[in-house]
Image 1 (cartoon, rainbow, N blue to C red):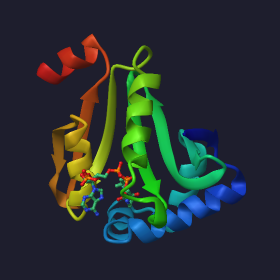
Image 2 (cartoon, helix red, strand yellow; image 1 turned 45 degrees about the vertical axis):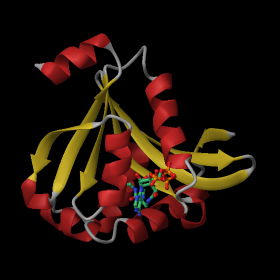
Image 3 (cartoon, rainbow, N blue to C red; image 1 turned 90 degrees about the vertical axis):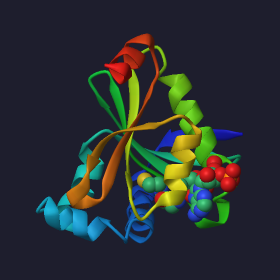
Image 4 (cartoon, rainbow, N blue to C red; image 1 turned 180 degrees about the vertical axis):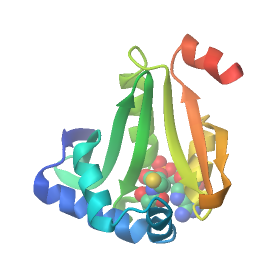
Length: 156
Ligand SMILES: CC(C)(COP(=O)(O)OP(=O)(O)OC[C@H]1O[C@@H](n2cnc3c(N)ncnc32)[C@H](O)[C@@H]1OP(=O)(O)O)[C@@H](O)C(=O)NCCC(=O)NCCS
């Protein structure tokens, strides 16, 4: 069973390291385009939304970073630690978020980079649809409606 707790300051450092390695293909380039230093970006991860630690039983297996933007739940990042990937954890986290926020949010949203077809195929399997392409950074914004309003927004 998975449980979730706000990341402690120490865990936050681990989250940053994991993200730096796993998103190496696009993070430095994206930060350059946004004119952000790594330190400034790291500060954003502490001040925008909330990073949660994912536990399987007592073991820390990954992190997710979310932000409530009005009625949109934005998932900035989902990182499962390498030894635990491919075992259904990412799927469970995404399904948990969809259930937990079904009554308070209209839509769940995330960005996926072109260099990450594995993550994209997971999101497509869970019925996320591409709603916007940010071609200059190679990102697709994907959304999944959580409520009737979200479905109306999707078909508008
Ligand atoms: C992407 C990620 C969050 C998925 O979590 P997970 O626990 O490994 O995923 P699950 O076991 O629930 O689902 C596996 C599905 O994801 C997809 N997938 C994920 N990574 C994949 C890869 N490297 N190659 C192929 N498919 C992949 C497949 O559709 C797979 O389905 P299958 O098992 O039926 O083939 C995780 O692999 C991860 O942290 N990757 C590194 C960081 C990252 O890319 N994060 C997402 C961008 S923010």
